[in-house]
Image (tube, rainbow, N blue to C red; front, side):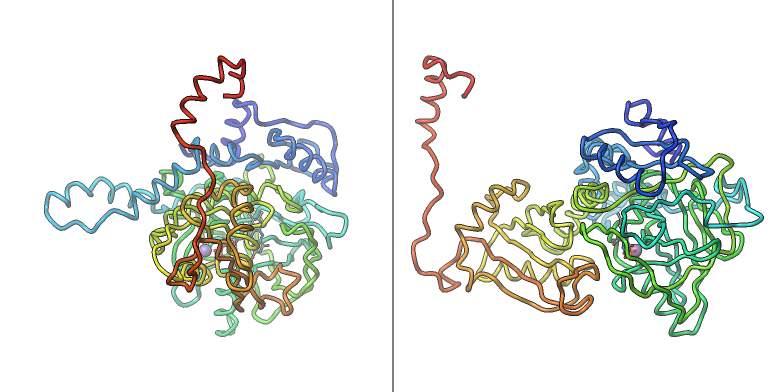
Amino acid sequence: MAFDGLQDYLTALERRGELLTVGEPVDPELEITEIADRVLRAGGPALRFDAPRGARYPVVIGLFGTLARTAFALGVSDLDEIGARVAQVLHTQPPSSLLDKLRVLPRLVEISSWAPHVVSDAPCQEVVEERPSLLDLPALKCWPGDGGRFLTLPMVVTRHPETGQRNVGMYRMQIYDERTAGLHWHPHKVGAEHYRRCEALGQRMPVAVALGSDPATIYAATAPLPEEFDEILFAGFLRRRAVAMVSCRTNDLQVPADAEFVLEGYVEPGERRTEGPFGDHTGYYSLADEFPVFHLTALTRRKSPVYPATIVGPPPKEDCFLGKATERIFLPLLRLQLPEIVDINLPMEGIFHNLVLVRIAKRYPGHALKVMHALWGMGQMMLTKIIVVVDEEVDVQNTSQVIWRVGNNIDPERDICFVRGPVDILDHAARLPGFGSKMGIDATRKLPGEGFTRPWPDVIEMSPEVKARVDALMTALGLEEMR
Ligand SMILES: Cc1cc2nc3c(=O)[nH]c(=O)nc-3n(C[C@H](O)[C@H](O)[C@H](O)COP(=O)(O)O)c2cc1C
Ligand SMILES: [Mn+2]
């Protein structure tokens, strides 16, 4: 099921009892954060603040505030359903016989139906502001040490100046004044690459920022897709319905027609300004640093828009659930390259780039090392600080099991490998920004071919016959509750 934009999604949430409207005046500076954080920790509803102090528009937060809500936002009851659909598309073989062709035809037609289309009349352009100002937006100051107010859920649209390839990424923006904002794309992200290309050509780069959309489109902006893959096409796949796009008024980019607000503008080559500090998703402040500057040329909006926000900070926060969606949706993609991977878990406390637990079907000496190095060579996985590899009988979703196995199975000097390479720009412990060391822990059972000649003991388990006998006995013993 696809939603007709953010407000349609909010209506659906309300029907499920997952939207609370707050009529009391609440301050977008710090107060909304504290309320949203408490509600999220309690597994509570999404929140709509109708009277944020000093603001012209309502603020909504918590769109992805639980795992179940995130699944609902993406039109499924379980995120693995999307992973299964991804696997199905990936395994569509090129047809050989005519009969095969006829068989795959419906699927190919379905794939082409996800491609975005352009409309001329769009809700996000119902109002074109005559005096556009970023200060009209009820942007949050999230944490006490933040350097100002930030757009925290923006879909930032850019285009590669040579190939024309579009990208949509979620990169926070710090509002400086009516017409300018900082653009915090990390150097490893696609928006930053487009900007580097523009700078090399000495060109001004058009940028458009959409705020609010169908939640699947919002999620797509956070997905670590290969650089050549259009997030809007991916959103169409998630929604099972193409995204309608509309051309901007003052640049030649396109934005989702269903957006609440659209900020049109550009960044100049060579221009930088101090951005931050910002209470980040690591749970620490990311310190002030120099980032490119967005210049606003137009602000368009719906007649009655709502402003979408999120907060990040010490986990769990909403981005943890978005990350879990990515873990489930992208597993089949990883398995395409690395079929030995049975499952992965990026625990929320590991804030995604710090810790990845990998379950593999180990087949040969050095197999765990091969998997680590492959992951460090794959897209944003390259930023993973710690990769732990376990055997296929270990459920990586159960971190208690993983810790138990890892502690038992490693000889640290032998089984921990250190490598150097790019690390997340938010890694404050790395000795240089964005460049440092990473660690792999091979907690698989060691093989003779790996030089391990001692006997390897079995894990303790009761025999099945005794288990069956005791199943029956438990009731007789008055212990049926503990069966
Ligand atoms: C709430 C939220 C805020 C984010 N903020 C940033 C940010 O400020 N800078 C950044 O580089 N990535 C940020 N990300 C992560 C990117 O959106 C993510 O890496 C995405 O895959 C980037 O898209 P790209 O591969 O097209 O560059 C954020 C993610 C979420 C969920
Ligand atoms: Mn991208």
